[in-house]
Length: 82
Image (cartoon, rainbow, N blue to C red; front, top):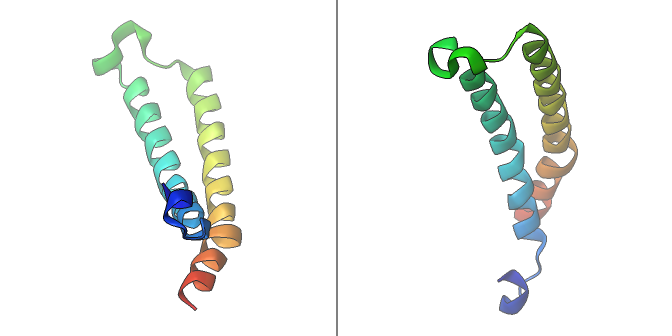
């Protein structure tokens, strides 16, 4: 879509990164919360080990998302609107 419009794709790439930085942790947190609920998942709810690993993965995802936001998205947005 962007390449056929003749516009440089930088804006679309920055927008995609910003969306991913916000959406990925939200989806991961929601999935972790939902799969941990015994009233919802019954016997298939996360166990202790799964919750520990999910928590570590979630924290890693938050760190990566914050890094991308600070290093890539904010400078990219600044360049677009400067």
